Image (cartoon, rainbow, N blue to C red; front, side, top):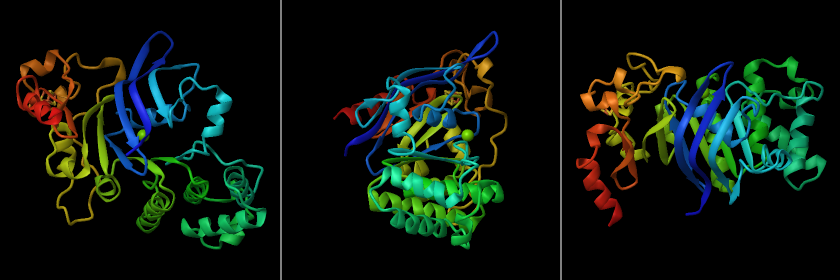
Length: 334
Ligand code: SF4
Ligand code: MG
């Protein structure tokens, strides 16, 4: 398998008036070609900031990004803005819960999708319009022909969201970053959108980064999962290992929010306590203030992300030096 995206030691800090806060610390991960990687965690854990940095969408005046983000062999952090614009929406598309890459108010919906398609795919104007209408129907927009003639302000937020998704998928990106793509949509539309994402992957070999609170969606869509907490990765595993053998107390807390595997209720029930503010991170393990298993050592030193089994890493003193992690490293290396 070829790696499409490799993020090395990503660090994101925001300059405030008189302080700088670090939102993401030492995050490394990769996405293989044709793979769906899930990123889960509560809001404020750095998931969205991480994905925005991949698209270089963080404000350059206040955000400082260190590390490397390699996409298809190019370091995105080093590319000039013009090249990034070329990649954005073309080879990497992003869909947000709140469409940030807002639609252009002066063009009709149909024209905008047509133009996006024509920019990225070789086809005639007529073929593009046919595809536009097909995509609008596929994201559950009724009367696609009429909607195509309307302007963004004439649509509801939910409809605009679906238009954005139709546009992102129609352009056949190599990498689709979907940040809570279906959270605001009703269940039927949500299922349709997830289905479309699966088709995109199957038909074009695209990779997907799926950022979500919904563990049900993760189980259904992803091969591998990163769990983020307070700006760090705390666990990474293939989806089966994560669901059957979650290691980190935070991940286990998230899992407890699924009452029964066969029930449709999969929203997170909040773990008691809150994600620490960026400006005031605990000195030791960042989860310690909320962790039911916290020990003395957890309060002073932040554990490393270490292997606990093949392809499975965890940041927790329960698997610290000489323990399970030490043995697992052996297995991984052999
Ligand atoms: Fe809990 Fe300690 Fe593990 Fe942190 S390191 S998750 S406080 S047991
Ligand atoms: Mg978010």
